[in-house]
Amino acid sequence: MKTILHVTFALLLSAVLTALPVHAQNSHPADIVDTAVAAGQFETLAAALNAAGLVETLKGDGPFTVFAPTDAAFAKLPSGTVEALLKPENRDQLVAVLTYHVVPGRVTARQVARLDDATTVNGQRVAVTTNHDGIFIDEAEVISADVRASNGIIHVIDEVLMPETANIPAVASEAGQFSTLLAAVNAAGLAEALMGDGPFTVFAPTDAAFAKLPGGTVETLLKPENREQLATILKFHVVPGRVYADIALAESPLETLAGDRVRVRRAGNRVLVNKAQVVAANVEAANGVIHVIDSVLLPDAPMSDASPAQIIQMAINRGVPLYNHGQHAACAAIYELAATALLAMDDVPASAQRPLRRALGEMESLHSAAEQAWALRYGLDDAASALREATMQMSSRH
Image 1 (cartoon, one colour):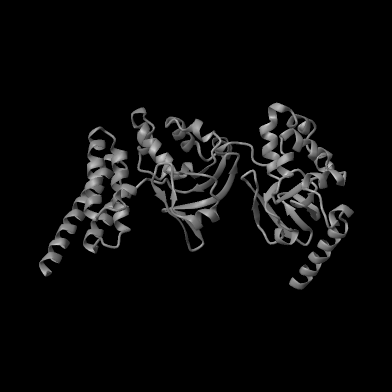
Image 2 (cartoon, rainbow, N blue to C red; image 1 turned 90 degrees about the horizontal axis):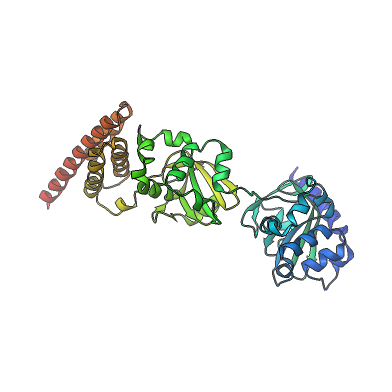
């Protein structure tokens, strides 16, 4: 079957190559723009490039790979779409559409066929599907491949490719499962920033992820007096740039807008961001990309270089003022974070791990945030005692 598919694809590729216009096989090809104009079936594309101010760019050195929609492809768009895009006031939108058809470098059809996706000059990625019917870019079919130009290569497609035009908050709102996140973004005064040019990468906790937090935590964080703390937590979910999942895995750890880092890794067939699982990756937005996660990320960088005893003391120092001001859920969240961090450390003895596990287990059965905070506090205190005892025993041996 594999051999048959290879033969079928070879025949298909041969067919589209033999159908190329004569100028495409010339030993001295023109640049991309002149090649497209000479072909006679890209008048709308040429007009759009001119209106967007991209002609000189595509006549430059490049090289570029252009997925070029024919006039017939533009004609498939809803009535009035082309006319609207060509208006001066819509130039930015037109540029976004046209640059979504351009990939840096000279990528032949044979190379395209080996890809699952390709990053465009727009910043967003196009999906690539290759099967016995041909090569498809998003939903558009490549109907003529490898048209050579002096500064790149053209693949003719039968539909116009349309990038995502909504910004990150709009995409999240449309998804319908990020109402808590959006409320938090608004309360922290970050909505306008996430509507800006970016690009940004957002690890977006669902409503169900926020619901995992101790009772009252979200309500406490949404209070005006806690705006700065909320903003810090939300910035911990945002990385500058458009970082797709494969890049995140390769470049981990990633620096967040909060100044702390998140670690992205594989665990079996799962992808984790710190301890949160990515349940949907590479959701496109006009100004970035969204990765949906199943837990809220909480900054813990200040504890990362501290000893176990220091972590406990820092957690208590942070938690006590919160508890005394009635912010029991926030206090419990800090204690829980400290306990979880301690259990992940190799140098915490079993005697200190036991009270932490017991406290975390007990917390699950408690409904009051105040009770949860105290259960965790007792666990931290017992762990601190166990650490002191272990240190004394080690000292006595020496």
